[in-house]
Length: 387
Ligand code: ATP
Ligand code: MG
Image 1 (cartoon, rainbow, N blue to C red):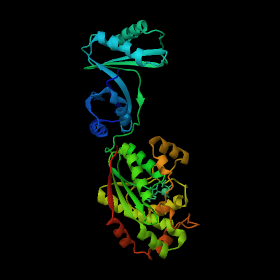
Image 2: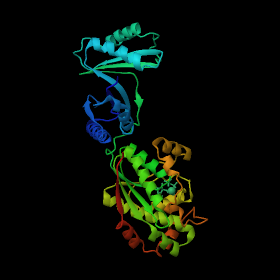
Image 3: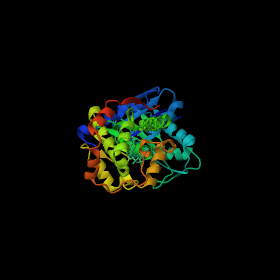
Image 4: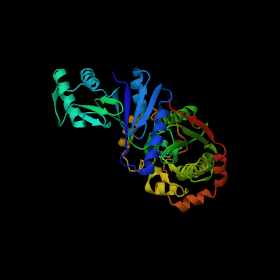
C-alpha cells in the first residue's frame, strides 16, 4: 500500500550557505541515481519525497537510494490527503498489512498548523483507534516493536519504520580527488570512504601489458563501476606503466624496485590530478601491511608529491577493511586472482627502511621527467557510469 519514499538527511550539522549547497547537491544526486526511474521528486521542509508512477518499483528505488551519500534514513510511506477519517483508516490498514510487531506507539507531527488537532492529540486519538481495531496489539511507549509515525503536512504521510542509509555528505560537496585504484581490496574501499565525505572521484590505474593481462584491466573497470554506484560518474584514466617498470628493473637495485615504482606512480598521479582538476590523491595504503607501506616507505613515497595524499585506511585493521569491501560489494571482484603491476618484478627482499637519498641516487639513472611525461601524455580515459 506504500506509494512514496520519504528521505531524511543529515541537515543538523549544517548551517547557512553550506546547508543549501548540501541540499541542492543531494537533490541532484538523487535525481541522477534515479535517472532511469519513472518518478516525481519533491523537496519540502528538509525532506525529500520520491513518488513512483508505479508503486511496484518502490523496492528497486529504495535500493538505489540506499547508495546515495547524504541520506541518513528512508521510510516507505503512504501519502494521503490530510483528512482525519482517511488518516484513521489508513493507520489501521497499515498496521494490519505491514506491522510485524506486537507492541506499538504512535508518534505524530503537525507541520500544517491549520490542521485542527495538535500533535499530541493526533497521536493519542490514532493510538486509541488502532488499538480498538487491530487485534492482539499492545501499546508500549518506552520500547515499542513498531513506531507508527504520522506527519501531517500539505499532505499526510504515514509510515512504520526507518530504513537506515549510509549518511555522509552528498558527492560533489567536497571537491574532487584522484583515486589510485589497483585491482586489490583496499583502494576501492578508500574511494568509497572519501566519496562518503562528499568527494567526487576520478581514478587512475597503472597497468603493464603484456605482463598484466586484459582480465586484470577489466577487473579494475568492474571495481570502478561498483564504486560509481555510490560516487556517481568516474573518469578512469589508464596509464601504461610497462616502460617505467622495465627502466627501473634494468637500471636500479632490485630491492628498491617497488619504492621507485611507487615514487613514479605518485609523480604521474600528481600531474594527472593537476591536469584534471583534482585537489588531492587518494590511496588504499594501510600502515605496515606490506614492505612498501612501512612508515619509512610511506614517507619515501610521499616525498615526491606536494598535493595532499588521503589515505583513509591508514590505521585500519585488514578485517575491518574486508568487512567494508563485502558490504559495498567490491570484495568478490577484488579477490579474483589477476596480476597487478605491483606484483610483477617484485624482489624477494624488498627494502622496508628506505633512505630517501639512496632512492634519489638510483633515480639519477632514470630519466624521470621524460618517463613521467611519456606516461601522462599517453593516458586512456574510460567514462564509468553506474547501472
Ligand atoms: P590494494 O588492495 O588497493 O591493491 P595493496 O594492499 O595491494 O592495496 P599496494 O599494492 O602496496 O597495496 O598499493 C598501495 C596503494 O597504491 C593501493 O591501495 C593503490 O591506491 C595504489 N596502487 C597500487 N597499485 C596500483 C596500480 N596498479 N594502479 C594504481 N594505483 C595503484
Ligand atoms: Mg595492490
